[in-house]
Length: 310
Image (spheres, rainbow, N blue to C red):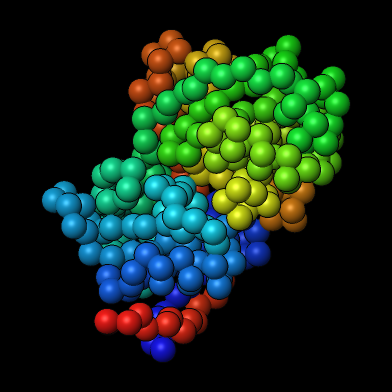
């Protein structure tokens, strides 16, 4: 058995025990996929990021992401957690205002921008996501409503259709009319998992234009039981995809690029603030960047089973 160091970081918040917790392992060069999956399962966090030396030209670091159950190509909050730790530990020195880096992921080479706050050091971290994609599919609204445990009348179909969008993982976007209903959702997770599997989606991402904060455009909740995540308190890729989806519906207004604030996690006691920057022309989305702040809440060592032949 070997020991490997890890940190736990709360993301999309400055307040410990809020936001979305992610694990970060900086020394992952010699770990196999099986070992990384075992560590992620043991930590039990929504996502764990494993950082190693890049294997592609132009990249500064290679990142791989695991839920407790599976490997995923990209994770927004775990990316921010990893670069927060890289700066906090001095692996990445912060310049006078910001640092620009490139991460190698299984979704490709993606830019990361780290802003400096003069007193606090690491400020907000913004990551470029994959170009958004959208999927046409037919879904009876009652199927989505039943999976979420609500009546069809609570869906805000007069404002926005149910749709599918991705900036890494395809997600089902479900509009809810009232914040009270969204906050009170008690989904049937088995039905949510069956629904996602039936259409090839990673998660159900429910949203409302009613918000807790007057500075937020949207309030969201995210359910990904097929990936071992009953509910995610803040979802970088999901909210990035949602922002892009709403651009195609002409529900995001302003001069491109526009920054919107999406709140999440309140019903879990982990309020989060996700920044989504969208560049677009009419209904065509040109780029999606997602970011926020982070705070390290724990660090330690975890035992790793040495594999045969190592």
